[in-house]
Image (cartoon, rainbow, N blue to C red; front, side):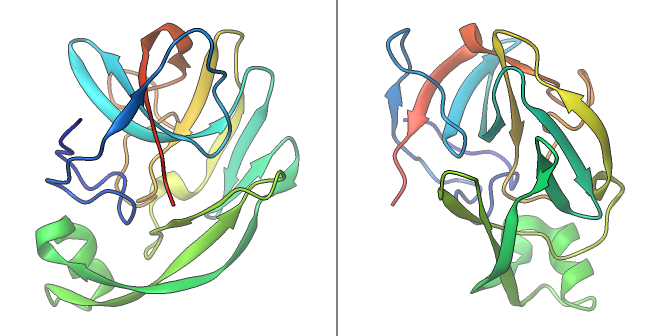
Length: 174
């Protein structure tokens, strides 16, 4: 069990949630779309795997391109965004208010795996360079694309590529 301390995985996991993960081991292969826990410098982080070794990932104006093809994106469910979840994002998305309803975006990977992401404002991370995932690593993104220090940013500002030997858990999602 892990307790989330940030809004990086909203709407999947909110700050303070305690999701339960299945322990990661060498018999499990990481899969695109899985939410994972990994350890880095004594801290545990939760993100979603988007790219595997050899994959090329790029973000252009909020769209994720996997091996040159844009992931399918469509309007998802409505989500009540509050300052309790993420004050900065809420104030930006809610015209200065501390809460409002926003539309989520349903993103679908080539194998049909889909999940909802929170992407309600334009940020500098909406467009990122072309990344090629090295052997023994994965590329992760937070579901809260507006507030996630994930693989789009090199360490120490973000996470960079995640080494497979740092994975500690895989979350089962509905």
